Image (cartoon, rainbow, N blue to C red; front, side, top):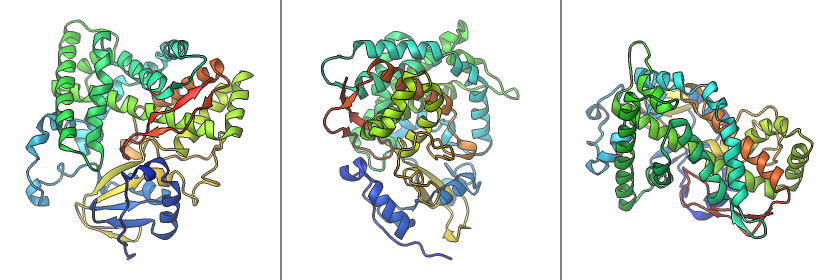
Length: 411
């Protein structure tokens, strides 16, 4: 068996959040697998290990489908988190076994390529409208002016969220996702509970309305979808809609912002994309470019799993209940898998990026995310071909949901 060394990693250090790559390269070279006692997790940094682990059914997003809390030696659930857990305990991406298969199957019946394809015209119109109002002769914040409102509008359209409710969606989501960070405060807990309660009640009211008067949206479809005679309960429906909205825009906001920053810092790649767009070949290049941008700077850098049993994994001994942290952001720059991983190659064909996960928990919203990024980059550079970076970007405080708070640009 290989020894697992002990190492402390400062995930929430602002310098690490802004540029983790040199430290991650050193870790891949020196200690690609290590245990951090502060986080009580084993960190995996190599693409091969992460890929294998994601496909290994001996690991899971949760354990309570197999064991009781008493068997695992876990304390009772924290009562402070009850409102948040009301939502989180019904998120299918955090389930395993038959519960995950049932909910994912119901979502897949309505979250179809046809639904995504139907958004193209609206996506283009919304992107143009956002570009219309940014200032043409002074800097603007790409994050708040374009990256944030665009995916919120699209997933809200897909779900069928009425316009008066939409201004609440981003604040609710921002409060909820802070609970996914490694260290959250009492204030974060209170804000997440309030947001989860308000969000749940809103979607429950909408679901009741759509059952009475169905429309052409996901809430209506999810409220009536059946799989082997099973339907979503009201709580499952509300939690699923909230998850789709959170996941459907958090990654896209951060992915589009980090991707634009990467382009503006890599002049050759930027010129290559602009030239392809100018001669009408942007559609072709953007397919590989978006994947490369999501590999180059990963918007959701880390996901976690539990070891469901005592095991040997790739030469390492793991005990049942051990949490493992999968550093997608490191695997996506692994020299063993990607030639010149620190080079932004928009034509990279062999590109098994980890960004959307692998296996049974692969992201159901990946096609929509790719479509949104392809559209926003194409229209942005069609309309503002001379876009340039203004000053240094400002990163958000968390690492698990890693993104930019501010990206000032100008035409």
